[in-house]
Length: 275
Picture 1 (tube, rainbow, N blue to C red):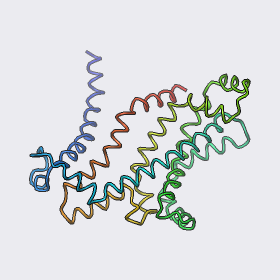
Picture 2 (cartoon, rainbow, N blue to C red; picture 1 turned 180 degrees about the vertical axis):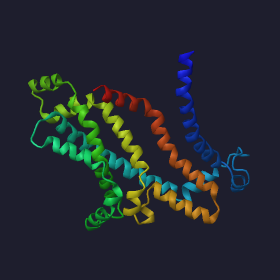
Picture 3 (tube, rainbow, N blue to C red; picture 1 turned 135 degrees about the vertical axis):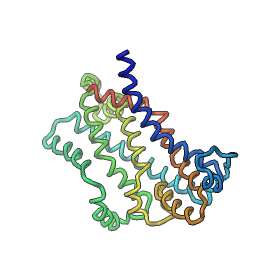
Picture 4 (cartoon, one colour; picture 1 turned 90 degrees about the vertical axis):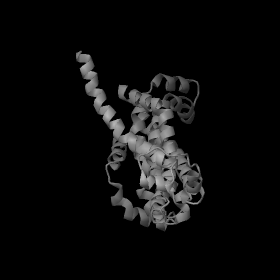
């Protein structure tokens, strides 16, 4: 009896939270299949029929397709750069003793506490002088710089606690440090690498503040900027169905990544916690 009451005490708040989070998503997805009259007249009803043309209109006429492609290019490029540099830096900080190692590590950790909006003006000036403003490759570099501190902070304990015997055996067999890192340490740290890559993907995909400052050209907008512009434009045109379809298109990749990788995230966090 006590166990049942205890479980109910845990499950009821979780169920309430899932309802608060899930209902707006469900309402958004259902509205994406309605026409504008149904959305205005009866916003909480089921669609009378599925209007798939809303997605086609949002993808082509509202430029969601171009915004999505820009986002994919920027996020994938930034992820590759972040994971490559972050893993190498975390490996060095976690496995080698040298003067100033802790200062560097805690410097990366402290940088995560700095509010990004305080750095927007100097960041814009530096990016403008380097001709990075309004370019996809510029946003890739800035996204990577933005995500590196968290990546290094997360991965350093993973590399520090990996068994030393494998590396010593590889050195005896004649392997160099690069070979040990690529062939032994990276596969052993895979749970942590995958987890932090997923966290970075979710954060960068939903990033809004950096592109709104650094990407003034509408043709180079990423998805978050495009959706904001779409909300303004479609509001004037009263094309609410295309707006909801665009929002649904933006949410689907994030949901898919989380649904297919939540066990990996849990495994990575559990492994990190056990260490």
